[in-house]
Image 1 (cartoon, each protein chain N blue to C red):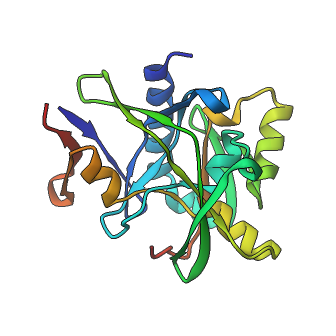
Image 2 (image 1 turned 30 degrees about the vertical axis):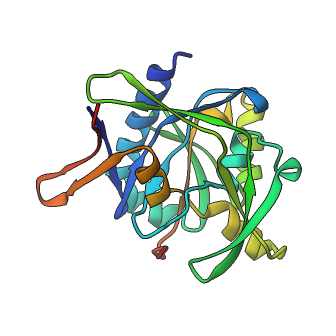
Length: 76
Length: 148
């Protein structure tokens, strides 16, 4: 898929993540979630779990937004 | 030229696509936190797994302490970043090397922490590539700019 289209898709899913962050924190705390087309399509405790689930669904993890949900703020 | 940023859960995020011939990676999106408090830029362990970068073949460079944990910076082959501009064009930045941050502890908890630590674009990247950070959350204006 063309680079700009891929980035645009990721941005759309990031916007969905921002809009639904409270819900996601309530339901997926301390989990990795994969978001595609404004839906949570995989959940796992480790990144490998999510990658495995996506691969089984014939989805490319490298083209999917994967985000770690945490109620606890990470201070860098 | 401006590169729009997003404000996700209190953090400033930029998502370029990354290509790396050595790892057969082509135009893969990676989200980085723009962190002016970090002098080092690196890709997270989790993103390296997602992009199938062969972590075990990377050379160790130096230790790093972040968020109360210890990490090891592993050096990669060259990366080519493409940033999407406001004009919906791609702005390329090539780095001769980049880094992956890997947690040094091997307990399950430490591995999870290492994987969920975010990828970072720090001051080294901004300075080397002459990028300016504009951050005005009150007016919802945030972007990187480039003097061309």
